[in-house]
Length: 140
Image 1 (cartoon, rainbow, N blue to C red):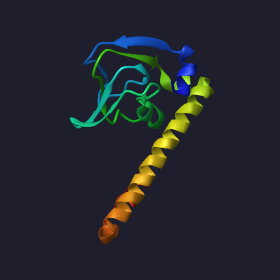
Image 2: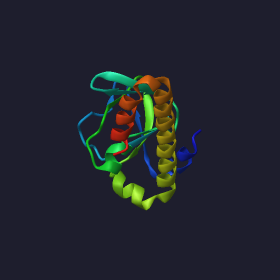
Image 3: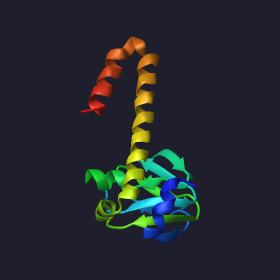
């Protein structure tokens, strides 16, 4: 299991039925979820972005860290068990071991996104101005 799960002893474990909405796009819950087991769907504007089944995956962290509404809807596809980090901002300030793992996961996501953008730029070399504009807008 993912190493972040080793630090979830501080968190409440909660079971959710299939079809439960954990986070609603546009809302602010102030909660971060960490997947223990189950399958989760992430949708933005009713378009499925991804499904996640990897233990240790986090949901809601962008909203908490950036103090913005949720950027996607997160829903269980089957019965699932997640750890809940209620009042996540305070929790992260007081539990640096989890915050460190969260930072590492976010860095990994950034690396993947950066590599993807470079691949796009190489693939669409004829339209590199458009890709450059997209990249420039992303890093502002």
